[in-house]
Image: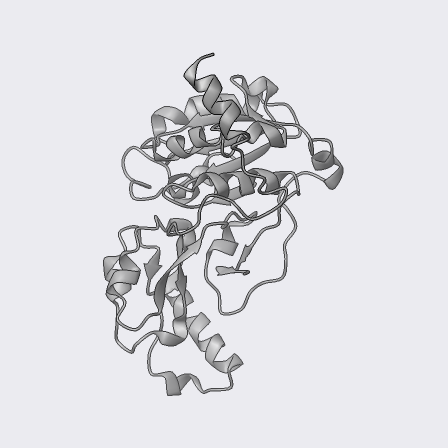
Amino acid sequence: MSLWTWFGLHAGNASTSWPLKGDEHGQEGVLGMPRYDPARCEPGCDACAAACMTHAISFTNVAIRDRQQATVDEGRSVESTGHTVPDVDWGRCIVCQRCTEVCPSGAFIPSHDWAVGVSHREDLHWAASKPLSATPRTGSDSDRRAFHRSLHVRHVDAGSCNGCESELQALNNPFYNLHRLGICFTASPRFADVLLVTGSVTHAMKGPLLEAWQAMPQPKWVIATGTCAVSGGISGGNYACENGLADVIPVDIYLPGCPPNPAAIMHALLMVLNRAQQQMRGGHLER
């Protein structure tokens, strides 16, 4: 008997039961998306926006309008606040935590929030009030029901740094064991139900990406995986890259993160099947 065979028999099943039961998702203590409380913003402070490399935090007319609406909702006059708060787009956030480090008032604080996949890009944009639940972008319930127990995924690296790929590889390790959920990766887009795209979509990969998408049979879904695929990330919009996947093909699930962890990717895949619910709306995470 080999050493590894003996070890496997001795250790037993190493796979987590999550998400079928329990909450052992493997992300305990791991930093996730920062939390934002605009009520804590100090007048005249722009430390967070100055520190944000991807302009996920910025001062815009949208930020001013949302702040005015928030103060009206709270029964206070707009003039009494004396300042505006930044506009926050989690779809551009690379989870570097710099905003939490430089914020002097605790408006941005670290968190362990990771299940931030959404069906609509707007839900990654912070708003004064959470919008009503939105329906998925494409595919009927009957379409999704047909795939509840089997889903084939084609991954396309459209200009990634390989950070997202390292997390994707973890999905097939003994702990996550993605196959137990009936989800597996396929080498051919002709057998795929989901196109999972990483990277900021370089011009060189735009053609192969379109070919893969066009070769997939209907119904089909697309997941923009990682901040680069969602919005272009740090390199988006430069001489070699697009500003995210939605400029090239329709996107059904947006999953920011740099990189998103394996549990977040699993959650996004289960959202396609309606076996998991969206937890972020209007930039607010439902806890």
